[in-house]
Image 1: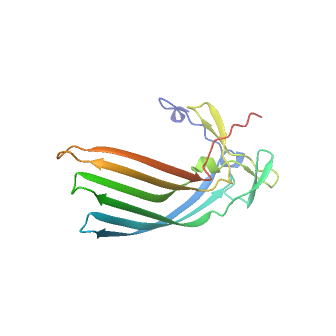
Image 2: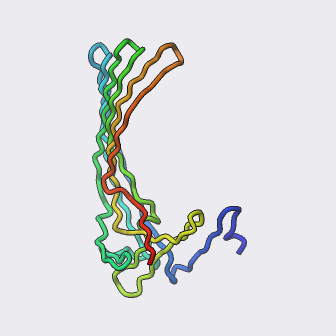
Length: 193
């Protein structure tokens, strides 16, 4: 029908009882506490904090049933990870004013979480016979995509050091380096079967 088309894409809706659909319940609760502590007559400032984040996600199949604790991905049976997790994510910054506002050095560290998109986790058929895979189609890349319910959240460690110079009001020069480490990054894998 005309409602399935727009200027740059079209949509194909499957009836729920014919597969090709997935549903999620997704909950997030977060809190943050921080401390700003000046030292050395406010030339050195410590700013630290922690974020507590609790995420819960339930994936349902095309029949609106919660998925089992394992799934078939390709020809491999995988265990679906626990979908409710609590993370404690620290952050800290040290700022040192070398020359009363003209030269500043900052060092920062923090942890963050990257959660899989819904379509990245949906799509593998259940172990029980007759489970249909939910496959989404990406019109931009011209690919059919099937998710992996075994994907876990990615824990990211971020660190950077920055040197700042303020020659005159309204002007500044900054030079910095950063480091990023991702634990269990999410990557797309091509299946040419």
